[in-house]
Length: 406
Image 1 (spheres, rainbow, N blue to C red):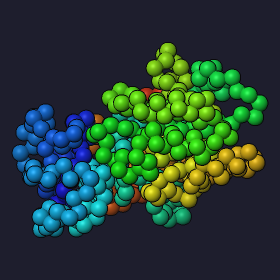
Image 2: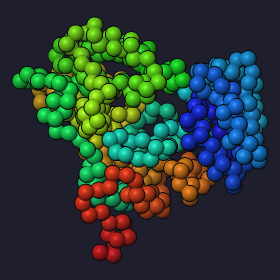
Image 3: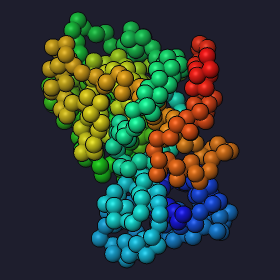
Image 4: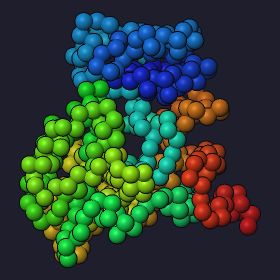
């Protein structure tokens, strides 16, 4: 196969931990081309990536260093030379680390986006990634033969107790104590985990709000005192970004909005403020944050404000007002429990890849790109999941073979 890696917004971490191992694995058995711009605003490649590149002389490297290369991060769909080059190259498969979805849509062959493999609240590998049709098409499940779907559901039912046992979630009383909140009778709480906000994060172009500050203000005004809005910053924003504008927006709302700071004593919020917040709030609001899956796992009713598609089984509201009204009336809908379990099992068994594994091959990527559901890969994926940190506190669940022979 001819495989193209199209990488306008690859960061140094992503290149070192995910992309370089993926290129190396693909090039072991396929013709591989890489299109990437020079360093700019925390994305692209530079001298720091030279040692990795020098170890792969058999890969065809195409540096997109024209004067308009910054446009590659947002929208390069009108750059005819670029499109013509890719069409002439005629890749069978293009793997993109790109916030621009319009340009790859013009490429021939199959196109997939390289996205984070995390599925919170459950702990997966630090460099896990998946291949997706869209950048924020949350909750999507491919068509499955009924027998395959039933088998996946059986494995999911076995996995679920162990997956929950891996979590360290404080009780609601412990959470409120850590948050320094004394709830009044009937007081409602809505969780809002904020997006990653940093100049390197060009995926912000897909968000419904121009900034986290704007999101806080809009949601608080829609709630209008009917509930208390609890907010967490994205951990990378706290580490590398600027939270001052969002913090100012929170202060302007007075007591209607409260920030849950991660900069607390070790063990506060059970070690994960967003997980505890979403678990113990009455509802949650998301943009494109992958924290939506926390709400699905715990059955917390959610609003999703995004132009990207979300699966019907998420039962997400499109606005916060109706969510709060249903919470008040005792009829708020959470994600479908059985399809939640199916999605997590599908994600872990069919989709997630770990470039740190010694047996990570090109076929791991090509198989998933062209065949998103394959029971033949489930045993290996299940064994890998069971080997991750946070071991279960009860007897391990059986493999499909063990179940069949029991």
